Image 1 (cartoon, helix red, strand yellow):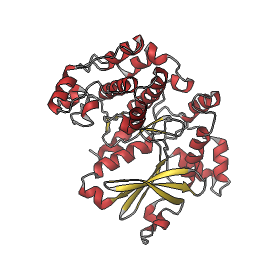
Image 2 (cartoon, rainbow, N blue to C red):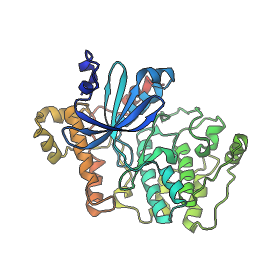
Image 3 (cartoon, one colour):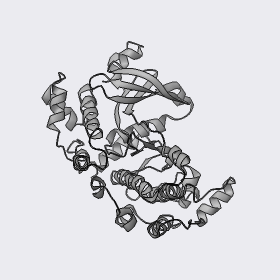
Image 4 (cartoon, rainbow, N blue to C red):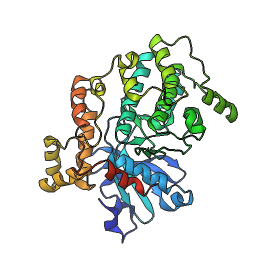
Length: 376
């Protein structure tokens, strides 16, 4: 649904007529998040209600639009899903996947250091999602446990793409951003960096936090903290396994040119252990993702009263409307209620899920860059 169709009314009910709004899940500095039920499918979603005036006053317009543009393109089991954006004269309603179990940060605080198998499972999911971002020319730049959400089955969903940037061949980023404890040395030093390697560093810090329950670089005095990060000064606890003791130092290498890459992490023996089948294959980028439409889900949406040909055309052109929102909600939720992330059925169907994003044939990297240009 396009909010512009209803410019004459100020009623939230008209703008959000496809949703039954529920309780408020959280309140932020420029809006709130409410739980809602999608009327056609009955599936739960989270709706971010962002006040345009507050966003503008806080100079957050660019950050918000950047996150929306990135998430609109993405479809990966470990990246938060965005279903639709409804704009009104006063607010922006961002309809997203409802993630029940909070932040990975709180999980670590509550449990302390995790058992190696559980930490590895989280790490494998994070790396798969980050790899998907990089293959689609996006660097997250603010990876930390606070931006890693957990669903009801304790699976990771990467969120908060507000600091993300598009990677361009031959271009180097120089923006110093992200949380200091998780930021790479070249970022806090203000040096030029290409992109993917800063996410690798942050993933190394996250892995350390998962396995140790503490941060490798921590100091209340910011200059001291920066000194430790720039010098790569940290200690590895003795309880870590040989595999983890080998992997972490390869990721926390001060020189970005010598730092481990995502493909190298994938090949590491510690990472490969107990790797679920659906994560064993690197995710395709958006240009590789097939146009195959799930006939069963398609029929379900047609039975709701939508035209078959129009729906197929909308899916292939990645259009946002009532029919495609219903289709993606049904598709995503069918996989969620299967045998769990380690069930054989899920492993097989998830491979299909990541191959079922629909892009126009002419979509290529240059057109993706064009779409982002207005944000920079």
